[in-house]
Length: 154
Image 1 (cartoon, rainbow, N blue to C red):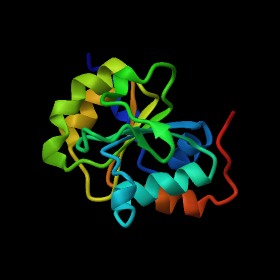
Image 2: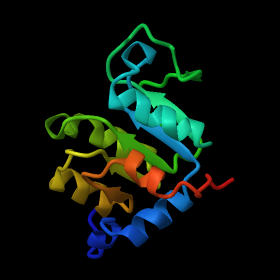
Image 3: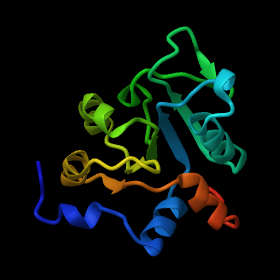
């Protein structure tokens, strides 16, 4: 499962972040919160990405009665989305990541982005070893604002 060059899949520099965002159009948001929690980062960060033109696919962990967030159909697993997912933006605490590993490996997104304050090196190693790019402990909102000129690829 782990290729010897898995560390090359860890994106930690500005050039790597820019290249990842430039090749991203479709973002699944694991742990997204509904409109009733619009004041929380797990809602307003993906809302900003959607306003910027990214295709945002909600994958909430809680809120079993919610069927739509940001006007989009809710999925309960990333692997159930269908089609290519360029990036999975994760809003889960480090200790809550392990139960999502198999789903992420099955979905095979282009990248997994762990938001600010989320770092789990073993989790990242397993994803990277499977050929999935990984960003840890960075805020995608900050990075998108820094690149205001960037538009999602088609």
